[in-house]
Image (cartoon, rainbow, N blue to C red; front, side, top):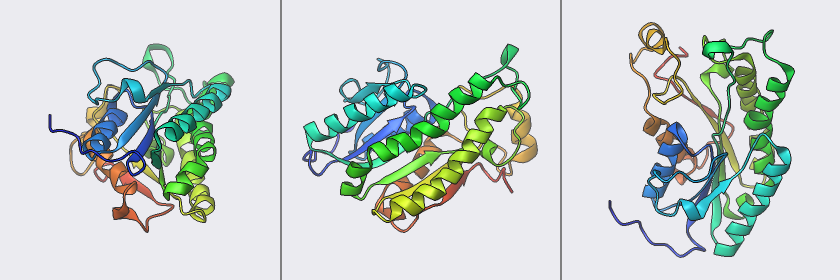
Amino acid sequence: MMPMPTTPNDEKKTLILTGASRGIGHATVKRFASAGWRVITCSRHAFPENCPWEMGPEDHIQVDLADAADTLRAIGEMRERLKAQGSRLSALVSNAAISPKGPGGSRLGAIETPLEDWQHVFQVNFFAPIMLARGLIAELEKAKGAVVNVTSIAGSRVHPFAGAAYATSKAALAGLTREMAADFGARGIRVNAISPGEIDTAILSPGTDRIVHEQIPLKRLGEPEEVAKAIYFLCTDQSSYVNGAELHINGGQHV
């Protein structure tokens, strides 16, 4: 492995990323770390030993985003870690999301989804991103940082596998992104979203191959690394005048 670029802590860009333990999150960590960023990862689980980034265990925060109190506790820990090491928060990426399934992995529609599942999903997928951004707004403002919310193609159309609670939470997150872009933009913080389609991760449902064949002009799944590149673009100066956008990463599935 190539040696990481060395940068003083007070100049080193830092990314805080939720949902880092697999798929898109995992690829995002690798993309930013390879560019010399410090990455603080957050997930429900302790740091997995098979993850590829060198400073992972020291820069991992275990947090249950379904628990508002624990989310606030984690925000305090994030702020302390940033302060202790003097690094600047250049980007916040809210990637963590949940999508409950019915018996045998079946899709839960609007009628079948229990109320407690709706509340659970919205706490993780919708409320946690705004809690994190508001809780870290001073750090983001100081660095003129960027926020990226990960929405979904399911937020704009009924999806055969994504449940109703997941889909509506992602639609709400897209609307929240616009509101945040207006409010945070005045502080020099850009807020955008990426909307992935069918990405080749462990959470794909049986039958996805039919969607690829019938609905995606490129006739293939997306790779997590392709999503990570788009996230990186929205967090760097290459997108310095992009604010309030939702970037669709789906091979043309939405056309």
